[in-house]
Image 1 (cartoon, rainbow, N blue to C red):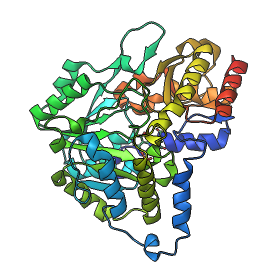
Image 2 (image 1 turned 90 degrees about the horizontal axis):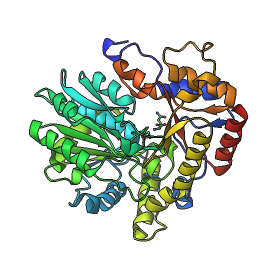
Image 3 (image 1 turned 90 degrees about the vertical axis):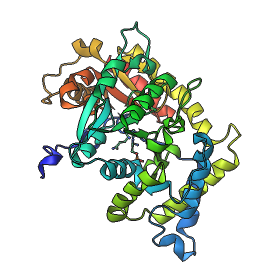
Image 4 (image 1 turned 135 degrees about the vertical axis):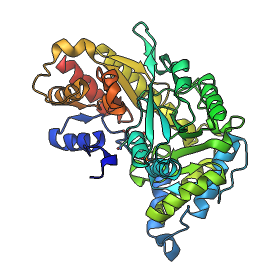
Length: 413
Ligand code: PMP
Ligand code: GLN
């Protein structure tokens, strides 16, 4: 294995999906995906396309994105960013948000370039930066000392520490808002600080916004690309899997100014070249459907968060009643919970992993029948201890599976 790939360990996803198959936990609250049906108009669109006699719907489409899809993405985002986004030069359709991240990082980061990554982080950022020959520089969000009720807004950056990471080798900062795994929605003030540092040091901003539609009122998602002087230096990433609750469809996108998008196109055209045509067409039709009811509360962009909120509150209650200290997420569909108080109840000595959260999540899955993700996977080697007393639970699950979680945790306790 080339040295730049590190030791080539299994990613947390590969390992925990395998564990789910091995342990067969009664409920899997690990990997983030819904265990119920996506909106009907979304799956019906794909089914109609699948049997369509239009031969072109089953052949290669435009490499940088099906015209109907990029046109709809422009319609969705132009009003949100406050400028007319050029569908054909400022948007790239990718194989999931993963490939949008990959094309952005590989398309811009050169050997020795530094990239600032905020911990905890979606684990592939680190790998992709190293793969491009770059040097990740990490800064951790830290929980402010609080009483028992902590929210993702209490996880903050040290401003002086952030400023100290910017220098003349810094190429990019990766911002993930709303945040996986904490559910933090970065505030106007936090994003302004990041934007000012980017402008001062001529740094690009990669903004991963795949959870943009799952924000709980009164919080609001803020797009850093809409800030003065930031369009020119920001690439924003989104996901159809997250937007329409179809994570298996693996269509994503990146948008930004044409000169920066050109570098993504170079990567994309030589590895993926073009994404799945029928699925792009179905995502385009799904956006058209939602755009037609954009001002209605029924629009999925708003109804999804309304539907998820009681699930979030229910999972919070279950975790609190069973000895965890969960952080209330302002967005997304994960809860990160501290399990320190349960340590006395669980014997971790049989688990051989290096980090305690891996031991805990494995033993807990075997004993309680509930699988969660170990958050140390979202920290760099030197900071993994910061994630070790936590576990991440996903709540975009059928109510009956959340009820089952409640019963299993009660029994275990
Ligand atoms: N970024 C973040 C923060 C994620 O949680 C995920 C997982 N959905 C992705 C990117 C990748 O998204 P996709 O499934 O569209 O590749
Ligand atoms: N984004 C999802 C999560 O955080 C899935 C990630 C993956 O499967 N690689 O759980």
